[in-house]
Image (cartoon, rainbow, N blue to C red; front, side, top):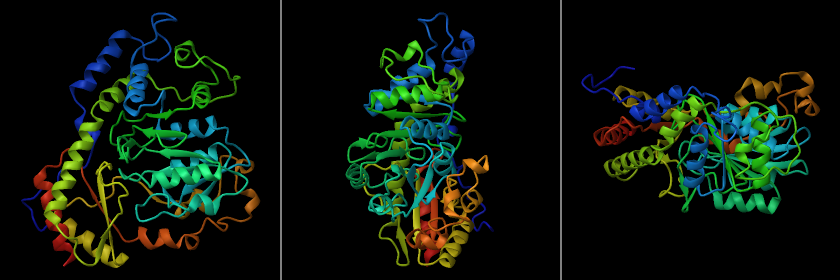
Length: 411
């Protein structure tokens, strides 16, 4: 795209990774100096290394939940959560069709079938979909809080309770977001988080889950550590479950050191981005005709890391995006979110082995419920999106520039 303002340089896109500094270095140096890089091997049985434990403690305190567990990635957090809920072959999990690959594949990896659902104009799971799609096989519904915007959690949590299914909150894109006074991740049975490179806070890779359910926590601990339940966790819950064949999703002390330093910056990052959105909104004023905005169910609680608008048509969106690019405005989504039914792993229904696919009984894929035509509401929105990311390197001047550029681009 031709830059119509060569004097204007768009700020770098990024969140926590652009605030990596001395805090992260100091904690990493502490781990290196200790020479204990594995979270379970310290100076003795009663002296485990501190980083992963401290990270879990501070997450628990921040989210006001009794149990938090650090793992190797956001994907791992989803797999651990699904397994801890006892979900497996023959079960179904409802998941928005508009979501990230891990939301779909984590369910398949546990042997269950993802059942795709429509989104609403918040770009999150639409209320009513759990009830519409529930079958006797449904064990859980997964809600993905899209790029800092919480879904309609009061309605969805109540719907899940009425249907007797667990609610999994995937907060990978929205750590720190708040819905009606409560942090996301605490409304459902379990909440999961990601510390991947592009996320709000990062340790390169890494993740965590939170829950108020003691039994689920023990199973999650066992799933992330080969079925073991080490003494370090006994202060939180005495073991009561049988050992089972778990996976290996243990977070290292080096990863935990970076994640801990970043976690301590989470609310500052959110506050910075929310201020940028305030400045943007003031500069934009009344929304011009021909464009609508992503619905934010609780405008006082979102993280404001990325703003989404919808044009009247896909062609109009393409024109606006081109004009924004010419005005030196970043208008590329930070997330890899997309329609699951447009991806090969969904269209073909393949797992790591033919017999492991949960789609076999449906016949040739893509079967009904896995085709674009089955999701008119989702399809009506996703091709008209105009993403405007915000980041920690953005200034108030950048926010005003973006607002004025958006207004120009619509004329």
